[in-house]
Length: 547
Image (cartoon, rainbow, N blue to C red; front, side, top):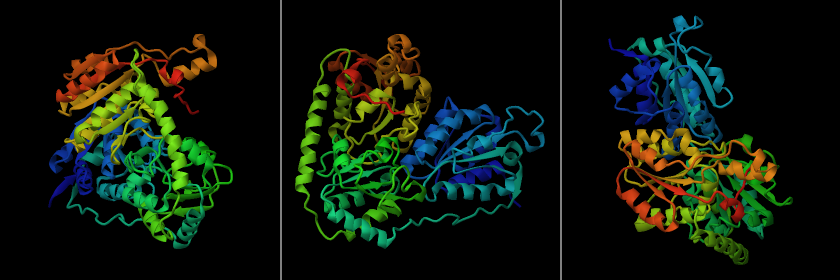
């Protein structure tokens, strides 16, 4: 009779879900999982901090539209990963965190790194529990995957004690077909009402969020927008679903469109701070909201038509229900004129030749270089003002090419997100758009990237400050009452060089493009450290801070 350890059963369940990489920081409590992963051909990617392991698993899930897995040891290993799980929860990412624990026979006796762990995750996961025995590993993992991937995605935490992982199970049977792959279809009656409202609208608008990516709804969104002739605005993981040149894609005129629209279609994005908690729309606007999670529909503002459904299915059916090709040329032309005026104003900053360097000039140089020659770049966004301003400039030709932390606004995702992106897409150039403050959170994991041979280009916008905090704090309280917001002009390029990578300092805008060329050509983990004007966001009127 064949005996399999609980740790090997864990690996078998991961392999059955198609997991090819697991992110971790070594710990003996979870060593049986490592041994099982070796047996199952799952690569172990060990980071320098458990938070980075959780973030990397988060990015892995986003890029594969499936589960990402992090394995951490007991106690501080688990607590270090809490922020990564909270970030995944806010962004609706199916992250599975596996935490080790003392042997069950020593629990409550003061074992090494013993603490209550499950309770830490009850409010930031879809499910958190401890696996009581090795025999129940398959059942608990089946429930974990089912919970993470059914309905609105989200993280799960499972605690596995040492004896649960090291003890054996004779002739275990792995469960199969334990979760559905079906998609929630929209109610035809509500679709008809939505199609009628859109057809009758004079000035409709659509804003689409992360579900466009998760539901693979990009083509459906395009077909709907072209038939309805509706201006579309994208946020989060939906960025890139319409290419920058598409006549229905708008970016800079969002405020005008949403405050003037008589009908607004909200697809897979919550009515949270990014939409003024629903007040971004005019008071009498008719709101149509599509979301797989019914608890999100009508949150913060009542909606006229709420449709619980998969985004792709809803958009495909909505497009079919429209009576015919709409004619909204005047509305689109009006918005395009205002879009172009704002773009021209931004272009002046993108051409800025002054020193220290303007954030928008750096973003423009990076966008142009990354997209040259038909490259298919992936951008990882990690920071405050620099990233917020770069997002207005960087052009995305495809979805799934922009990774940011999401609504939690968590810093430190740069290195771990980029590691996952490069592991999954070794043929694509990966650019980390990083502030100097955020570099300090998980910057040591660029050593992980060097160690695993994962070339990437880190573009640090260095204003020697926590700029997104410093500027509004000074405006509110003055420079004498704004402590804790200044940093040193650190040579982050030399930090990466010390890890075995390539680095260069840039102080003049004319140096940016040549430095990027050398960084990419190095074939290494490369850091271009660019000194920015700390006051540029304020002077340009481009800063924003939500509380």
